[in-house]
Image (cartoon, rainbow, N blue to C red):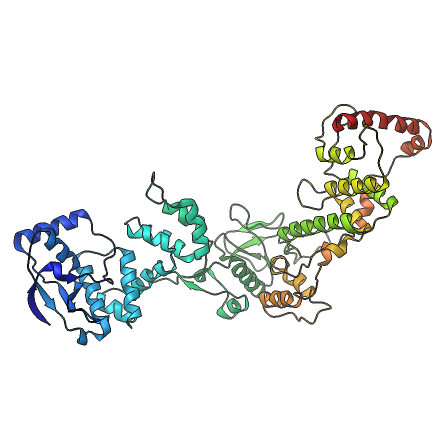
Length: 556
């Protein structure tokens, strides 16, 4: 390395310089005033230009050279470093990085870019930390910028930085998720700054921490839990976490089941975070007795908690003196989401069967009566009470009229109108359109089960409990695995070339439920006698005339 003088305009810009973000105008003004007053104290460091060039490339001091030109200085001192002894640019990159940090703190995005360049040149994270007097943890924090969307990085490089908590949330999300959120929250000309709180809030995921887990690593592996390190948390605490909330809570539940005391039960927490105890149970706040019971539950953070309670003494003979009560309900075989999916599957299959399956005319008419008895059908009563009728049903009926407005149609037109009307009315969805048990009877009558889709998918099988999932392995070569995740994956793979329909999705209703519905809606004896008389037939013959006028008006 040697010192020489040179015109600053002859120096070549380094394309890999560390400071990508422009310094503040105040910092530039201070340095410019210093150069005008006393000149450049520390000469810039340059290296001979490679690839056949005869100039010099600025390794450190690009800002000093720029401000020297602005001050009108025609010649400055420079330190020329021999490129042959520079370890292929690695040492030069470190000198440039360290020199910039000392003179003025770099933007965190520029620090990350410089660190990534050093890593590419062969520097390890520990070596970078020692050279820059930073902690390895800080180097890992800065390298989280590699997980941030490039458009967000450009905004951060302008000085619009999120706080550490927000940066951690953003960096933990996938790039696809960041893209979707950035579309809604990217800056505009009217508001050039980003609301990072809104961005982080949209990307936030519930975290379950290893420090709150009662289960061991073996159970964690069995549930497929993979811990991630929280680099922004306190350094003296276990910052590992997972966003797989379902697996974490499942492992906690299994740990409680394996460590349940003799007089203990597993319960749930209410909306206030307090355990739900059996009826008449009294919570014990003092010293517990041997006859007292223990309730274990998970709090809002997923931690295992336990409380002691006492049941009232048995007064009646034959009552079990060791009764601890019961409050916790086991997970249902199919979750609410699974039942919603079953409702969608049934409705689609029912409508496809109504559209394509062979149906006898008498069955078709019976189904139409069943459909009109559905709980989602709206009518207008004779008393004028409006129950919000469907205009689409009126259009189906209007198709039965000829051009002259007379109720006249072919058998084929009648069949098509009946099928379309049933498709409009019958529904098994778990919402206000649910027709109830009549839709399931209809689907069973016309064989809609064969139109149900393959339910052996990851999306649906994830809605099944362990017991229900293992029961689905019956009549298949798939054997239950130690991990629910593995059993589900094996079933999904097996049913790729086959069709699986869960028993709870079949249309045939429960016999007791059907018997209760029939008993509830059985006609009264008086109604049977009135139906046997000719009065009802006369009334029935008169009703089409009134309806015909309405249909004619609708057709016109």
